[in-house]
Image (cartoon, rainbow, N blue to C red; front, top):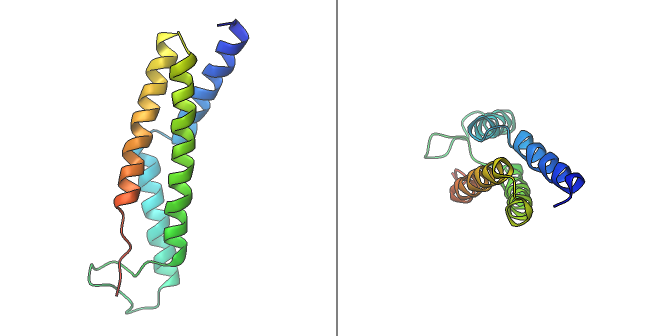
Length: 115
C-alpha cells in the first residue's frame, strides 16, 4: 500500500476513534443528554412505570441517528481491516468495529419508557 494511502487510512481510523470518544464516556453522555432532555420536556408527574420520564419522539430520533452513525463507523473500520497491512491500524480498526457493534446493540435494546 502506498505511504500516502496508509497515511490517509490511519488518519481515518484515528479520526473515527476520536469521534467514538472511547465508547463508554460517549454512551454516558448520550444517556445524560437524553435524561436532561426528558426532564426539560416532560411535565412534572409524567413519569412512566419504570420511574423514568416518558420518552419523547426526539429520544427515538437520537437513537436512530446514533445507530446510523455507528454503522457508518463500522463500514469505515471494515474498510481499514480490508486494506491495512499495518498491525496497529488493524488493531485500532478491530477495536473500533467491536465497540461500535456493542453500542449499536445497546442502543437497539433501549426501549423508551411509556406511561
